Image (cartoon, rainbow, N blue to C red; front, side):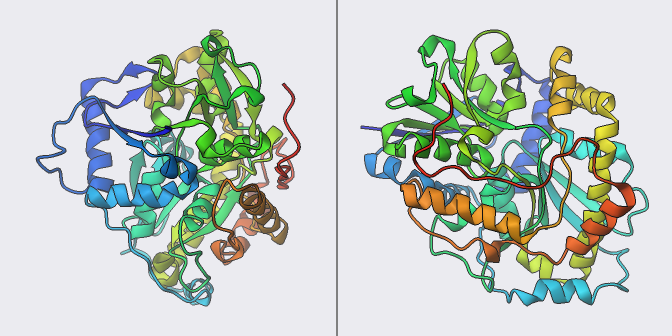
Length: 434
């Protein structure tokens, strides 16, 4: 019988790169996560240490694993996170943006979520937010799922640098959303200059190619491109979630989970796996490019915030500044690397490579991008790795394209950036090379 394993971090168990962070840093990060996502500590959660394992011994659950974003939301709800559905007309966002040009934003606070502290600190270091006519409150999370839950509940106005797949997988977990009731929308996307998601196998497992993953334990995070990589890997090999033993961990804990000996196959950010590959402890068996994962970064916003003229105006201004940030990023790799070392405890020998791998740039949401996202969703549904077919178009809001285009013209896109075209090859037949 297959096992679906959730690994959830306790208050003081936060780690980076497999090492314990300093006590005060652990406390600060745990406090941020708890207050932003879980609410006020209770007697059941306060002071918890180590890792909580919740094992669900059910083949039925494993075979329906793509519906787990909903299961994850239920888990969060049990911890005190309200995840609400918000019914809004699709035109409200565009109308809010159009009517917000002369709004005084001095009293507006944008509540933004990021995965890992490096993103917040890099944006702050770039200076692109200097002079912004509104305030920004940052919340930092260890993985995309709690960011998505916080955006959907309205606790956050938007999350930055999330995977484009997060919204689509959340939509496919239940009754598909429409333009009128989608509680969250993608308002900006950015391709990465370098492939950023890959699947690795432990050297000890003896796995040398993707076709050998059947019956193995597969570790990944939910709610983003890492989960989509996992699903596309299965699709390429004509497998379903029931053919592997899924182990779900926060993205921040993929490496420490690997080092603890839990799991044989891992999907996640290529940058996280650099030390494991370099040491010979792991080998790459597929990449997002090989299996056809679009793997676009995304800015995902709460629909109610988009319908609020003041919030929409602030988000529009922020999107222009974020476009400028990515241009700055590509010109300040050494500074980005230093932030990786100080904010994420990345070893110095890997920080520059990780900073380079993080290059990306904002682009307007075009019909071709939406079409490719639809192709990816269709491929997963046709292969049976997600149960529900969805129309992705209502999940993308183009009201902010003009600000991105204007900023691109003003600041330019990073040198060497690829064209914003994604391809989805997952037809259930093509396979990556061994």
